[in-house]
Image 1 (cartoon, rainbow, N blue to C red):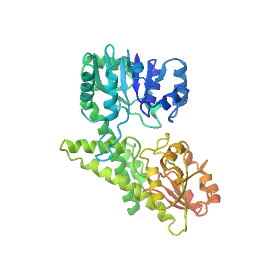
Image 2: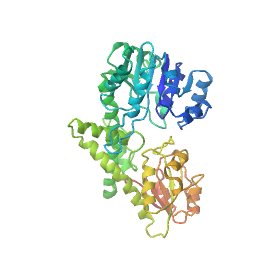
Image 3: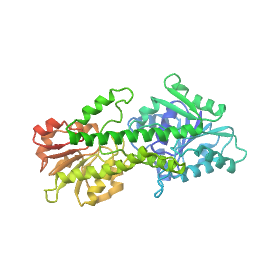
Image 4: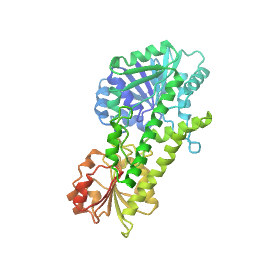
Amino acid sequence: MKVGIIGTGYVGLPTGVGLAELGNQVTCIDREISKIEALKSGKITLYEEGLEDLFHKNVKAGRLHFTTSMEEGVKDADLVIIAVGTPPHPVTKEADMKYIHAAATELAEHLSGYTVIATKSTVPVGTGDVVEGLIQKKNPTADFDVVSLPEFLREGFAVHDFFHPDRIVVGANTEKAKNVIKELYKPFEGKTNMLFVKRRSSETIKYASNAFLAIKIHYINEMANFCERTGADINEVAKGMGLDSRIGPKFLNPGPGYGGSCFPKDTMAMSYMARQNGVDMTLINAAITGNSARKKQMAERILNAVKEVKNPKIAVLGLAFKDGTDDCRESPAMEIVGELINQGANIIAYDPKAMGTACMLVGNKIQYADNMYQVLQDADVLAILTEWNEFKGLDLIKAKELMRHFKIVDCRNLIAADKAKDLGFDYQGIGK
């Protein structure tokens, strides 16, 4: 199948590489010339585990191509996937649809033969109707269908999730479009759940899923606060809760709050859509408010740990919003660092993958270390903000030799609390 993908970000690029690996002819389209030139030269423009090897394999095999030309990517395609950003509006926080609308309008004039247009970006309910109308207006003779094909790729695990999806949701209003998507995902037939629903239902499923998971994260963080006051252990509580099959163990890890490119944006967009339709989403609104406050609370914990130290040096491990990615968008770690900067803190930080993206956000307002031990030199407190596996292996004896004051604020519960305390650290975890 010939596939065009508009957008080469954290959704578009892994999707393009994955579809090429399945044997399709894929052309990825992006207006950003520097990005396309980098991809053409063999340079991956984002980090996802396992992506680079598959990228080079499929470029070499001639199945994966890159262009800034919409015509080149769309002409004669069986399927065109829209995977551009829908960032929150700076005022209303609704999803900003200008990139979706621009893509739909531009691709319309290059359609030839029957084409399925699949919206993979997370978009407000009813977007399929709007996209359909824009294409018809630009090209009244075009033979096409618009489907909703929401993505469920976890950043850091996008390659794994592409090849091992727990479900494929398709919002299609015609049998002809359904058959094209069935053919696209034929390699997964019998291996996963494929759900065909109305287009508006599909658009809602994505928002409903992300909002539910955000609420679950906020809930376990509130329970962590409760455990800290009552003497319970949140890890034990979460484990007991997760054994209930109706609840499950996932997203019950207490921490500094949810972040990334999806949960903050999608919860705010869901709240906006609800207000527009006269629906009061009390749980989602509470999660949004509580999650925002969570980052400030974590920054206060770090500052309180060194309130008696003059000009304290704060060592930060983790800047990405989660492990496995270099993405710092809406990262709880970056928001906490921002709060610390506002308080005039002296910060040195390390992240295995996100140093470059973090530097683009805060520049020289903080210092950057080459590894997790360099960050500890003469530090007065260690703050662990992202759950990278390598941080779990931190040598506490070596850390104690390097630090000036032996304090740890572990916002991810990565360090063994008993071991840290036995070595003389003033250790503070979450929910204990």
